[in-house]
Amino acid sequence: MLPLHLQPESHIPLYIQLRDQLRSLVHAGDLRPGDRIPASRELAAILGVHRTTVANAYAELESEGLIQGHVGRGTFIRGNGNGLKITPPPPPTLSGNGDGLRWELLFADERSEEILTRLTASAPANAMSFVMARPAEEFFPLEELQACSQAALRREGREILNLGASDGYAPLKEAVLELLRSDGIPAKDETLLITDGCQQALDLIAKAFVRTGDTVVLENPTYPGASAVFNGVHARCLGVPVRTYAEPSGALGIDLEALESTLASNRVKLLILTPDFHNPTGTSMPVASRRRVLELAGRYQIPVVEDHIYARLHAGGERVPCLKQLDRSNLVIHIDSFAKVAFPGLRVGWIVAPAAAIERLRLVKQMTDLHTDQLAQATLAEFLKRGYFQKHLVRMRKIYAERLNALDEALRKSMPEGVRWNRPEGGMAFWLELPPGFDASELMIHARERGVLFAPGRYFYVQSPLPNTLRLGFANLNEKQIARGVATLAELLRVEMRKRLRGSRRAERAHMALV
Image (tube, rainbow, N blue to C red):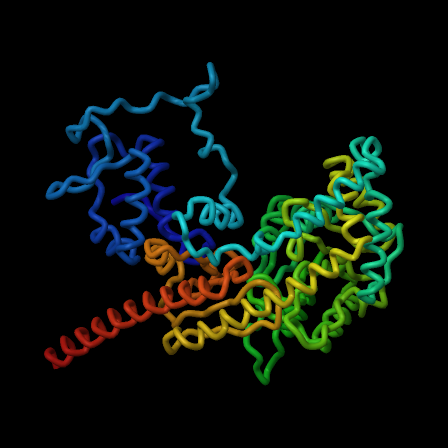
């Protein structure tokens, strides 16, 4: 019996767990060239998983050259023992050019965000990818940005191509402060730090505030980059459930009762929230819930990190005040970025926090990268100053609202009964729940063969993942692509439902025959 132990509750798909464990057994010498391993159907029965899980693990190992299947004989570890004349790889070595060192065996772990990126990077040509929640690049205002960059270089090229201040390029800070004030967010020069986007903001906050073993509370599910950052500093990460459907017992967003219980029973260092168009569920917290969060944070003296990155992308209606607007006790660390509205590649964002916190974060940033890219900052300062940012924002809100509506309409038209989703009022993604018993990772395997990609929900969970969930990012697909992609997913689900129904009927007939 092979020593294989799969963890269904892990965010890592079962077939990847199986692939990695079999690979490790080969490299450790527990499986040797010529050894026969169970057929996919046999191993699936032993492990209690779907046969497709084993088949896909075997397919990846075969593509790596570690195993070989033979019709009528079985599947074998590759080597002379099964008739294949293959020389085993040399033992790891650090000499020469290092080709013999298997670097992947040295990695600490595999991050969910890395897996999502790989899904997109290795996508088939012309695939319709719902994987990432990212801007539509065909609408990047390239001419305006080029004009801003040229103007900044002409005016002060030598200065902006030199080293700069760790807290940010002064003209950009002035422009961001004006933007924040127009949003009703009180901020001053000493309470603002320019960063390399929200991801760096989270990283700086983790380094500045969190020691090994400190407890950090995140929404469950949450943005994988946030959990990766805090796991990276060896924090104790606790997930609090997110309500994705309005119920009499609670509003959308983080479960306030569960949050209060978690704060009361743990010494929590930080609370990380995305109140507006939460990633991945798309939910937004009502104002009463936001006030309650601040009340709890004040009672337990816990800073709240507010990720505001999607908030400007509302599809219509009145905007709910953000946590920083409602904050009267200086509890909120507010982070934001240009990445979702305009240019993800420029990597410019900011943190708004009390002056003492900003000074500490500035010192950590200085040790991390000295300062954010000066040319990018100067270009964006000019972009804001000329009014291009607001013009672009208005345009993108309209486009994303149309794509949001197209996705909601396609889901209503195509999806079989039993699939649930909550229509967000903005942002870039929908969260779907498949009927109980379905695994989105297995669906992804079949969808990929049909040229459609999405993000299985298990990658977003801090703990207790629900395998029947998935995220559809819609911002970078047009309305026709959205409709075709959803129709493909819906058809795959119907096929699987029919298979299950036939299996259930066969089982029922077999049972009746025994009665």
